[in-house]
Image (cartoon, rainbow, N blue to C red; front, side):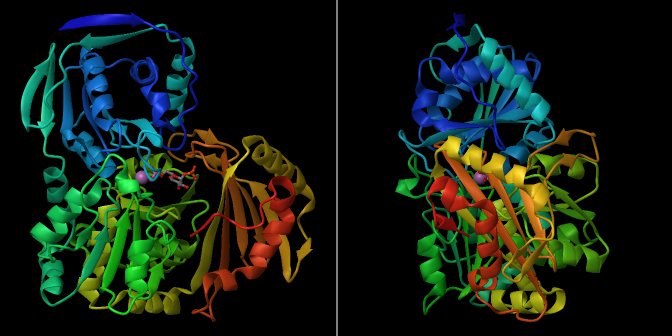
Length: 541
Ligand code: VG1
Ligand code: CO
């Protein structure tokens, strides 16, 4: 084993987006690419000498090889200790928990989340800070700046570390602890939720289907639902993490989790259906014939979280990303809770949680979580729903109907237009921003524009600002749409159009029908067809 310093030249980097750096796997596999970025990451946090890091990923293609590279580089950069999941596996929330539990200096998570995996698909890497949450913009900017000037990286050259056996070993002077990726996480869930009540409900015949989509949550969901709570042995579907996710697109929405949707909409549907994404931080909740939109799920959890032992004293406050519907705001108002609005991406919630302002956060993109970690958490959301159902004895449709009757309903949908030429998407956004001044008072069908802006955020905790976080157009009466470009795609641009309409009377309409006027107004204001040639979205959630 020798420690080497390898001369290299700057990589064609990219500003790490909402959740780290995502690119095609083959880019990461290219000569020195991953090494350069990892060195830039380490440099960007001020070096790793003497530090302890958590390392693991969602098991996608290249996860194992990349983990070995990171270990060898951490050792050569002087890290004291690395805690790594057995077989290099860790879900994103479990990694966040291990960072916090062991009071480490941070961690490296390997995942492209909900993007497909495989040699020809996506790979990703991100750094989480000592609070367990994604690195803030100041740090990711520093990493990006380093990628432009990097000229050398440090690495141990020698045999790979055995990651298949739990235990402690060494790599140079660095201690390597291979840990069970699931155990500590199960303990955490057990401390938050009423496992006996959920187990009793399951024993009484309550049936669950959890679709892990051949991604990371299989081992977690099995350990908790089947081995601990007594659910049937085939409760978790697609439970083995595979390098290519078995060809599935592990994005838990009605389009990609269509097997689960078919089952839940079918004649013999289980009582509860759920799915999670590649790295286990997202969730979708479905009842028999009843899809729960993520914005509604957040609102239902806000209204009922006190039923779970870990939240019995009530919530400190709640937060949602700006494009997420205001359903949770209504709950917050009724319960007298502070409610914060932040830009898209979990990192903005971290400051609010660290400052004790909020304990529940959520995004419309199938992300929900609390201050138990500093990431969204798919399995957590599932257990929260099960706890609420066990405590109330109500089904998913009953909970939804009761919720809307009490708080009103925010009809909501997101339309994604994928793989648009980046240039065309940029021209569209520039034109839209330029048109905002003249919009107020204009009529679109029955809707009149009340106000519009390009959302900017001032972090109330650290005073940092984030501009251009999405154009929003609000109509009189409270309907609105939001437009922004995705920061997590790897080919072309994805335009996201978020649509919302508030309704207190007609509570059981089909969402696309309820939103028809907002959809029409959005298309005529944005001119999506004119700029991109697209008339219909690729994915509707
Ligand atoms: C998307 C979602 C956003 C989420 C992000 C990371 O970002 O819209 O809400 O925080 O993915 O989620 P974008 O920029 O593509 O809209 V995950 O599960 O991919 O870490
Ligand atoms: Co994810």
